[in-house]
Length: 509
Ligand SMILES: Nc1ncnc2c1ncn2[C@@H]1O[C@H](COP(=O)(O)OP(=O)(O)OP(=O)(O)O)[C@@H](O)[C@H]1O
Ligand SMILES: [Mg+2]
Image 1 (cartoon, rainbow, N blue to C red):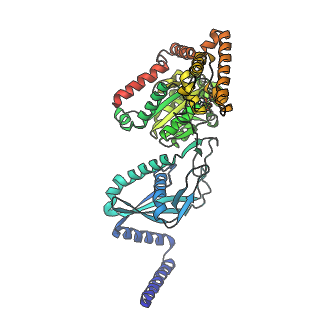
Image 2: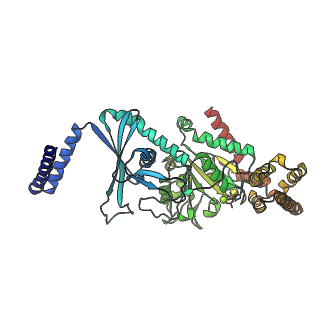
C-alpha cells in the first residue's frame, strides 16, 4: 500500500515538474499547440469517441440539448450521484437534471453511453451584438468507437422520441409571448414562456358535435401525417382561421387544440413586432409541434388591402410594385410589418424552417381580411364559431350543471330548443348564467329560459336585422369575398375546408 502511495506521489511530482518545465521553456502558443497535439494523440489511441451537444448552436437553440436534458431527467433520478432539482413556476412536476460537470451512465441496447453535463464560464465579451448567457452549457456523450453507428443511427432518435413522450405525459405545455417587443433574453430568445394550464378541451367545448369531430379528425390527420406531407412535397403545417362574434369560444378552441395535440402555443402580439425581419426571427425561434396564434388579426394589424402596408396601429400606402408586395424584405421605414411579411410568415420558405406547426388566426370580422390571407394552403380550414345552438347548449348544461338530456323535463327541453336559435346568445353569456346559479339547477334553468325568451322576443321585434347576424351573415360574408376576389376568394370557406379535408383524407387512406 505504502509503495502505491509512493509511486502515485512521484507520478504527481513528475507531472508538476513537466508542467513547470513546459511553462519555463515554451512560450504560451507553443505550449497550447503541444497540449493539443498530446490530446489528439491520446484520442487517436483511445477506444472512445466524444460528441458535444451544445445548448446554443450558432444563433439557434439546439433542440437535441433540450431533449437530452429531458431524457436524462428520467434516468438521472435513479442513477446519478448529484442532481439538480427544479420546479418551474406553476409547473406540476419536479425535474431532475445533471448538476454542472456531473456524469451519468446510460445503457441502450446493451451499449454503454456516458453523459457529462459541461458548464463553463463564458469569457466576458464587451462587443456582443446581443446579450449572451454567462455560462456555456452542453452535454458531452462518450461512447465506444465500435458503437458509433448504433448510437448515431438510433440512440439519438430514441432520445428525441422519449423526450417528446415525457413532455406530453407531463402535460406541461408552454405558452410563449413576444411581450418584450423584440428584445432578446440572455439566451437569445425573443419569446417569454409560462406553463400553459388552460383547462379547455374538446369535451368541454360547446359546438356542433359533427363539426367538432371533423376538426378533431383534421388535427389528428395532421399530427399523424408526416409521411403524407413528405410524399406530397407539402410543408408539414396547417392553418386554421377561427371567426365569429366575441364570446363564442375561439380562444377556448385554441386551448382545446393545444391540449388535444400536446403542442405548445406561441401567442404572437403583432403590435410588439416592428418589422418583417423581426417577424421572421420570431418564427425561426419557434419549435416544432407548436401552434402559432394571432388573435383578432383584423384589430391588431390592418389587413384590408394587399396594397397597403401593415403597421402597428397605422396604415401607409404603397406602390403596388414595391419590394414589400413582391415578397421582398418588406421593411417599411424599419418600423412596421406588411401584409406580404405576414403572408411570408405563414406561407413563405421561412415558414418551413421547422415542421409540424399549426397557424391559427382569429377574427370577429372575416370580411375585413384580405382574400390572399384566407386562401387554402395558408388558412386551410375556416371554422365559424357562432351563437349557441341547441346541441351546444346541451353540452354546456352537462358541463356546468351535470345535467344530461334525460335528467331534464321534456317540456323545458322543448322550450329551450324553440327559443335558442332566435335568442342569438353566445356560449359565454350562457356560461355566465349557469356559473352564477350552479348550486341551484332549477333556478339556473328557469333564469336561462327567461333570458333566452327575452332575447328571442327582442330579436323578433327587431326583425330581419337580428336574423342577419347569425348563419346568414356567414354566407353573406363568403359571397362578398367571392365577388371581391374571383380567383382567390371564389371558394367559400366551407368549400375550402371540405375540399381540403376530402383531398387529405383521400390521400391518407
Ligand atoms: N363554445 C364554447 N364552449 C365552451 N365555453 C365557451 C364557448 N364559448 C365561450 N365559452 C366560455 O366563454 C368564455 C369566453 O370565450 P372565448 O374567450 O373562448 O371567446 P372568444 O370567441 O375567443 O371571444 P373573443 O372574440 O372576444 O376573443 C370562455 O372562458 C368559456 O368559458
Ligand atoms: Mg378570444
